[in-house]
Image (cartoon, rainbow, N blue to C red; front, side, top):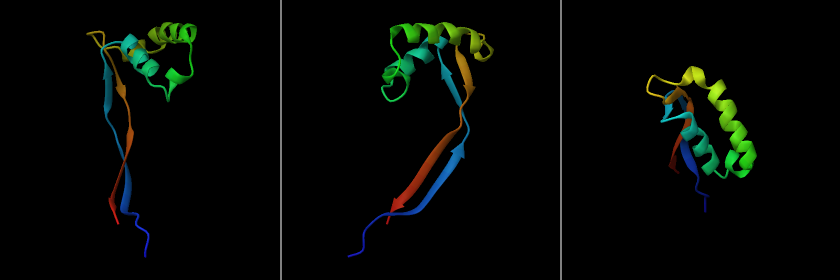
Length: 81
């Protein structure tokens, strides 16, 4: 019996924008993700991250206080063989 797998697998890059209501909302999202910074940083480190982010990310803050920046993504598609 032949093993099943994937056929016609493709990976494509798509460009888009990411938008959060504020820099604090962006940092809070990272905090909630256990597989990214949320699983690595403690309270003091998150406080420092927020403070530094408010300076470094200032160029990406919009007139309404949101933060927006380009974020490419990789999308994989395939069909079951």
